Figure 1 (cartoon, rainbow, N blue to C red):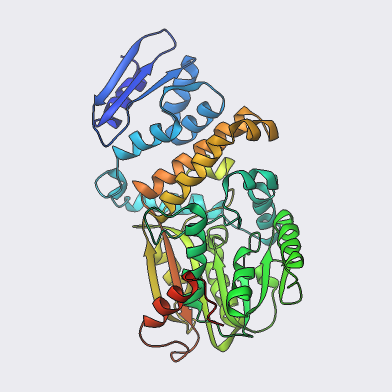
Figure 2 (figure 1 turned 135 degrees about the horizontal axis):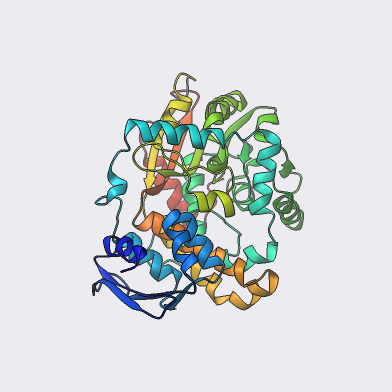
Length: 413
């Protein structure tokens, strides 16, 4: 039995994985399970097997991208579902706290490589967000929301779930007409435009992506609101002024642990005395960890998903009131599955934009990410923080009421 067979025999107990080796030998692991797919993979050469044994996460991704790990039955989402379904966060090894030694080693490694100084931050953002705008058109919703949707209804379309996400966030911000809002990491401008259109806010969106900036400004101009919804290419650390509300969706993952305190200190500085901020970020359950090598190398250089404890430590002592904390479970798994399906449907166009290797890389990223939320240790956190204890109502009813009004098409402005 090949060495990789011993590894896979331990990894797959439920569902079946059939492996075809370069010499034509077949091995099957696991047992049929209606909850998990049956998958067949094939290695084109022995070196591909060795690459995976050396570093399973990095090696599997690189061999799949290179076409040396081929999926003959099922697809990469099925493979990710099978493997993670056999090692769910709540029951598998990922549930164990790392030893003090491994935790210390991991801390040194990821902190050394995650110092996101301003020039590096812009490079990291460009690596991912300055890809062809057409690529994002092919798998995102019409509003180009590239963050976790909110599935208020199980059968919601991606468009509806993204619209409901905006309503969910807007309701927590408790915005009144004319308020000044800062959107840190504004993407293609969808949230900023929504807050103005629905609530009458004046919004400044900041980004480090030139591609996103161009599209966001064009959208504001096309809507005739460029004087009320402005977008700037600027690092959040360089923003000045006072804002009634600060919101950041899907950007904190790129801040870097070494700069979390700087981030919250800057947000407090920018908030008016009765100001409120809302942070929406991917996060990890359990203890702080390390970004996997494949994602750091190919998808999000400089990216890191924080533990809730890391976020809390960053704002402790800054005199910010944590007024609401919500954990969104499974919403991002559903979002990513929508993106994956749209990516697969657009395969020919994506390969024409880039090549087959890029297409395989993108599907590996989306499939792995979806399963990290469905079976792994990732969730989304939404933290609402206020500068004053009286800035918001003392019960959560106002959130539900405002969200319901926004979902029904009304404008609470």
